[in-house]
Amino acid sequence: MAAIKRVKQTGCNWTEVDVQLTSDGIPVIFHDDMLERCTNGEGLLAETSFDVLKDLDAGRYFSEAFCGERVPELKALLAYAKESGLKLNIEIKTYPDTDVQRLCVAVSETIVRSDISLSQLIFSSFNMDALAACKELLPLVPRAVLFERVPDKWRDYLYLEPAFFNCDYRYLTKNIFDSVHGAGVKIQGYSTENPEDVAQLWEWGMMRLITRSPQRFL
Image (cartoon, rainbow, N blue to C red; front, side, top):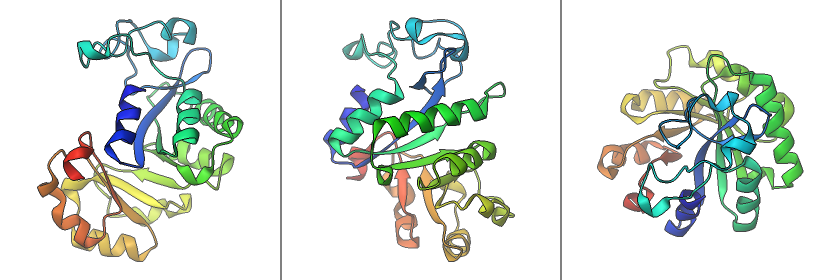
């Protein structure tokens, strides 16, 4: 939550987060499938109960200044976003053993219970089954298809009715921008810390950029 609050302090109004489920079905904000890299826990997140997860330190990995930071529930993040007005790009994070439907149902139910405005949310994923489930469960939340590189057959993904393609900025070309935008889909890029890398992409019509250093772009 310290990172999320820092986003708001910089003056940005969007942030991107990854959501997965604990073993007991609680949606939490977490990127890796394993606990070791970013916490003092061990094992698979999907095999860890929230009771265990909530006591782990998820801040020391980044800096001593963040010792004691916990892995947040999606419920807590939504409450903060509702209060602060921060908008969320929620990536449905999946791994080979993820129960995609269970994850999407839990996320959708948590969003509905939070009573947050759906205009504050975007769903994104590399997993097309996840996006299809999100479309069915909460059709009013815009969807972003995640690619590393926009494929030649990108029109095959229009059945998901995506608002956005999110892709690695390094593979974007003017032709891709023009053709994708012509189909009514906007481009959002990821991820660089250097504003010069993407200066031309704004001129082409890039919608947003996902970065770990938003202050450099402001």
